[in-house]
Length: 123
Image (tube, rainbow, N blue to C red):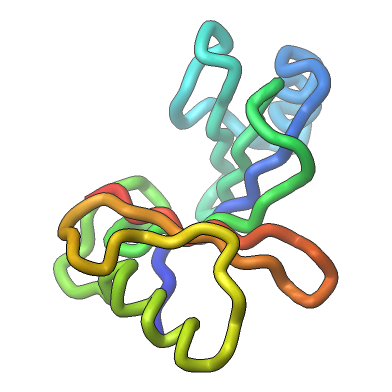
C-alpha cells in the first residue's frame, strides 16, 4: 500500500511566529497564505503544514496521487482502495471516503496513541 506524499500538519497558535521559526530551520513557503490561516513549508522533501485555528492537535497527512512537490504521479493507490485495506485490518475509521466515488476524497484514522492520520487524495 502506497500512501503518497507525507507531511505533518501542525496546529499553531501564531502563524507568523511559526513561519519565522521554520524559516530559521531552512524551510520556505511552498503553498498557502497567511490570509488563509495556513502555510505549507518545504525543506527538500520535508513538508510541514502550519494551520492556525483550523483544527486541534497535530495530524500526520498522506496524499495518494501526489509527490512531495504536489505534482500528480502516474501510478498510485486510490484513497478508496487504501481505505478498504485499512478497514479489512479492523482499523476503526474516524471519517470515511465515499467508496462509490472517484477523484478527490479522504478518510481519517487514529493511531493507538490517539494521533490523527489523514489520508487525503487531491486528484
